[in-house]
Length: 296
Image 1 (tube, rainbow, N blue to C red):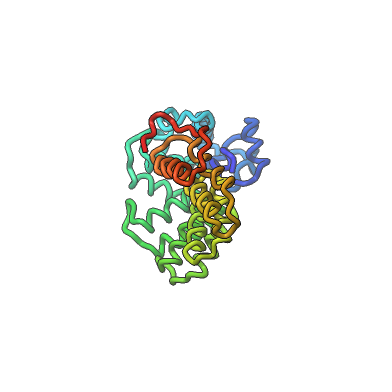
Image 2 (cartoon, rainbow, N blue to C red; image 1 turned 90 degrees about the vertical axis):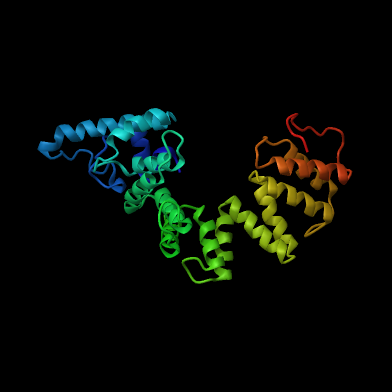
């Protein structure tokens, strides 16, 4: 979903293009789904000046967000955050700003306030975040049933990452009846959308059941999506001949690909494991390179 589609909660490309061409006004009192439909409708006379000023301010904030100037955008947003006509997309950004605490002090209570406002207007991301908060008891009293309902609604609104939470809920009976087959079904839906968590969870499930061919299939897709865990396990399966013929060339390919990745806290362990595998299995051809900061 593009930037302004995310901002205004619409998948209508024509409306998005119209805003990008700066040929519309905000119609701030309209629901986000009707943005642009009545752009020529005259405002109520006694609110004309106020509405015009608000629309200009919202457009200014939107342009700052488009330029990724989040700090400046927040400074303006914080002054209008209580406006009743605040566009749903700006509610979403306020929720994220307060939840993440990067451009302002972290305040989960305020984040949930804006997620709730936006969720009432069917904003997909806010609905998803609200569901996660209720499932985990983050800033609210834990309520698995309510959390599941929000996450399910988010998936219906197109949030593919929600398939992970839905699968976990059915796997553990959180907020919904325990149903292993339904959990697998949601993992497959997420895997079809190349959600890495779903791909890896599904691969692990097949591997645990010794259905190695299916496990390798999903580990490989995850690897192609940049998952170091996927790369490492695909390499091991090719080396061991699990679900495929033994193929040292492919094993070496995946192990070495890990060592060429970016150095972050979460992948250093896999880098070290890959290096050890290349050396231990005799797959290194003396062209291996690891960043100098890596010490295994």
